[in-house]
Image (cartoon, rainbow, N blue to C red; front, top):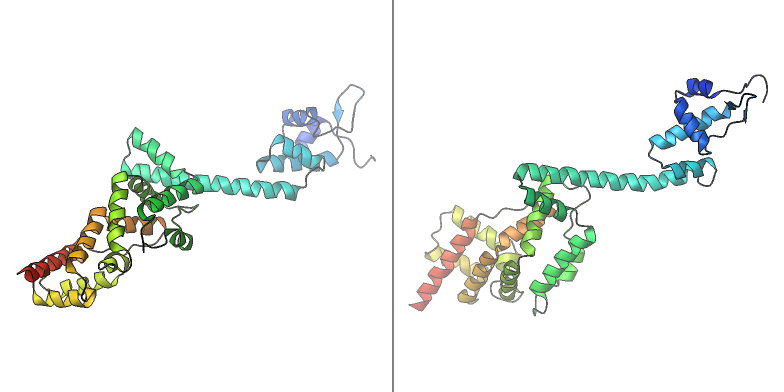
Length: 300
């Protein structure tokens, strides 16, 4: 140490760094900020390098590093880059948690949730990705497992998973909560399985719930004011279902209506962040009336 770099007392070091005397003494006591030596009176004296060392300590602490991590960095057991990489992952996790917090609070505020519902909303929204996936897969296995000709649900889930993103909107959280409650209902599962039994590919009514063609055709007929009980409606049915048994088509339609398939598909779209294509319930009512009218004519 030369005359141009005099040793500093704790008070002088505090003045140089804007750190408190108490903080400097604490870091010295735990061996992170070692004094150069002590004066004849026993006071700690620090070299000029203590200024940079103390600045580093304060920077690391402000970035959220723990005491042991700071100690290891200053002992050269860890590099700042290594510690920073660890904390990037931790900060990312905190950001994701905060985003979910915000979305959950927005849902609770919008719903005007009771104490009991608030607990349920919070618990469901905080399920891990694996837990949410297990709920969906269990539902899919129960409603489609063993059905001959049923869509390969495992493959469909791999292509288009039903996942709540890390940064969900309040709308996505709300849709996920509604979906989670819906698919855990045994009665809903039974109704969905019945719908799939009647709507598997190759069955007469399979196109009702798995293609847009039916919805578009019915929408156009309604826009033209076609009477569902009239001959023009029969022509629409003929284009859609050809020679398929109208009784089976009607049963497939009614099974989907009973299962609330439209609501299910709407929730799936919302969770995935897509804008669902709304189908007016009147479209399905028109189709049901048209099928019933044709069956009555055939029975005469």
